[in-house]
Image 1 (tube, rainbow, N blue to C red):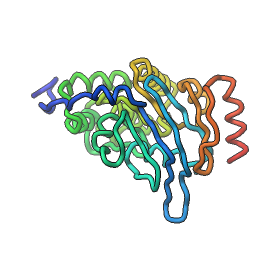
Image 2: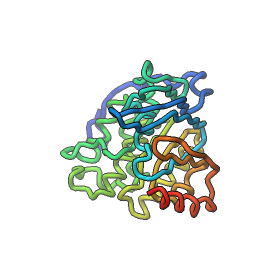
Image 3: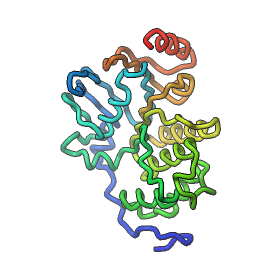
Image 4: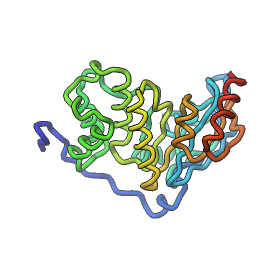
Length: 255
């Protein structure tokens, strides 16, 4: 089927989540431990994120933040512990979990030689989006990339590639967004667009887990903050502007 001169897959949208999945926590991890050889990246980490909630994870470099998000997104298997997403359990239901999750990591998972549109069309086919053309236009507009649709990814700046990675992550309307430093490379406009996307995800009853080095931005978009260091979850508190100075002090002290 052609849409605005472009080929879009004629595919079927997979079944929606069951009632049990809708009632379950968006993300639930219990006793997560992850080892890489002799290095302990995560130690007995437990957390719960409910629908309609954005949780920010802070900690110094090497604290285990990226490892935690990789485990939650099924990209890495824990050495011990359990992960559930919307009632689905890893590893047995990892494939089904991936359809409910949108992830942004340190890799963009974009194809340099394809155009912006072609990248999103590839992922639309992968997820079986019935309204692929309309949805691609929608996410391009959300990220301010509407006039870049025919440009190859390798020609884009780092910031625009990051915007496209965010567009890829939200394309299939995931119930859970796992965002590892999603503001990397973004200018002020890009961060504002990202904040709007996070706010809309929460407003519609989705969930967001993010890491960021931008403490003020993280406290602005999150409703709750977790602090991780050396693979251990040390504390959690409600997010607020008053927490910014305390977080920055702790990050400096543990750097």
